[in-house]
Amino acid sequence: MENKLLIAGLSAGVGAAVTYLTSSLSAKKKKRSLNDEDGDSTLSSPSNQHIDKSIKMDTDEAGGNTATTKKESFNLDSLLQEEIFNEQMDRTKLYYGEEGFEKIRESFVVVVGLGGVGGAAAHVLLRSGVKKLRLIDPDLVTLSSLNRNALATRKDVGRSKVEVMKQHFNDICPEVEVEAIQTFFTGELAPKLLHGKPDYVLDCIDNTQTKVELLTYCKRENLRVISSFGAGSSSDPTKVHISDISYTFGCPFGREVRRLLKLNGIQDGILCVYSTEVHRKKLIPLTDEELKLLNEQAVKPTLRVRTLGVSMPIPLIFGTAMSCNVLNDIVGLKTILEEDKRTPPPLTEYTRLFKLLVKKDLIMHRTPPTHLKKFMGPLDIRYIIDEIYEKKSGISGQQSSVLFVIRWRPEKPCAPNNLIYLSQAEAEIHEKVTNIDEHYPKELVERIDKLLSTVVMDEKQITLANSIL
Image (tube, rainbow, N blue to C red; front, top):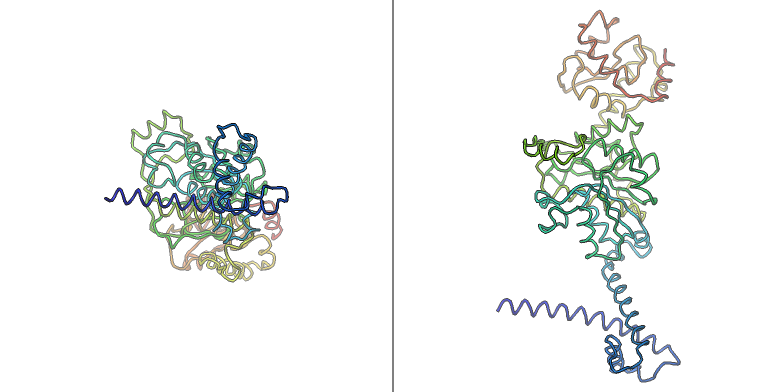
């Protein structure tokens, strides 16, 4: 009984769809026939129209006007495809407007990395009707990835991710051109993989070195790009944010990306999706069998050799947030309104510490505040605290509720490569020290000097800092 009801329901649904498309096309053809002064008057009646259309959809075996039949059949197929696409995109057009949708329809987007984040992002862009998608990923579909893959099924296991995605995409919306490239992204291949002037690039790579190569190339070539930080270790959807990379915080993976980008002279100008969640899952070392398999497959040595527990929700949210921002940017909608912008709490704290540094250096060394502000700011203080000292006192190695940033060697200029992060008690003592080498143990001095030797400064910072002396 249930099967009969199910079949009846499906039949009714299919019948309704066919009736809608047939009646819609019939109305258009009727309008054209009424405007045609040389047309056959018998076609003006609805009954004759239906008969005529039914005949032209089939092959005329009686030897009638086959040329007319073929022409009408071709036009009908074309109109049907256009009608289906327009109906499929109807709600998207209503949301973005005709002008906005045309911008989406003309856009070319590249998605690098088709894991849980990239697959979800590409899926959204496809269903929104972009003109062209280029999908780049080296991996195959695995059973363990099916818990978060946007479209893959068990039948797809062992196949290329990009080819599987392309096949499913063609079934969903064949009007979108999909280009599948199965390869690792590298800086050397960037000009080839990102050719064609894409309107947007989505960085969904989970390897820091490769990610930095992609972001650096996009930044230098003025390609719009949005990046995803670590999604796999998170579980709280309320902690997901979108902001410029200079405002990101709370993500260990993002901190490493910022550090490497700074080496390439990049500190801002890249949008990122990230999570500020504190309690995260830890990376789990691969088993001996898994490591052996990686070696046999000649996997690149720069790839992560530990695995991470992950569920579908957060990667899906990351990917959807990325694609939403891309669509908004393409049509000219602001994802974050000016009145809704907020400086994240950590950057507010770095701003306070920078102001204290400027004030102390003015009192102790008579350095003009305006001069320091020419080549240093809150972002430099965050870099020193987070990346160099890892939020711990440079002397004791302990965390404290009250910490300060001041000069390390008093005889050297106040600059990012001559700052020490100390507790309040340590700072009060350090301010009175005139000779670092005599006051502190040799091992401590060597350790701090070595840390500060890794600080990255551009030519402008070096020149302005040296002019203080």
